[in-house]
Image 1 (spheres, helix red, strand yellow):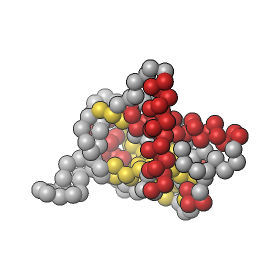
Image 2: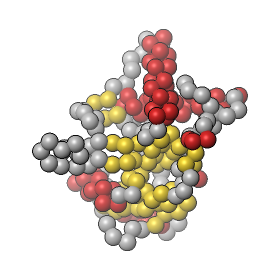
Image 3: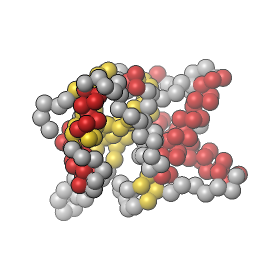
Length: 203
């Protein structure tokens, strides 16, 4: 793994995140019946376990919820907004963070090999890979490793959030380098990052 926490791993300022969900779930949070959204802990979660948001894009959050509803995954598509402080962030736009993830992959691979266990694999097609079992395992292992080090080694703080870019969908015109569903996703691990929830005015 790379060195201890760097001052540049801490993000300043607030951002807006948007979460696609069932209307009942969203209203439960807005009305105070639930303090927070429940973290996702699926084996294919792109950025590991946590509460997921689309950064700055309520329309994409609604599209996701509508697609989920069309498959029977929820009843009434809804978008919940959140004011987020990323705090100590594993930001995959950052070169040092990418290197830390690469090293975590190597360490996990060695450990599983020693026990005779296979590495998880991403499934689907590039660039988005529909099932991110490998990436999820690597990110969660990275968090586990930091948590263990934080107990005995000063400076090894756990991450509060993860931020990552995703190329998704087809080219928006022939020969384009831009894709139709490219987005930035936020995974909040520490609920203290979420300063409040709101209902977007227009989606």
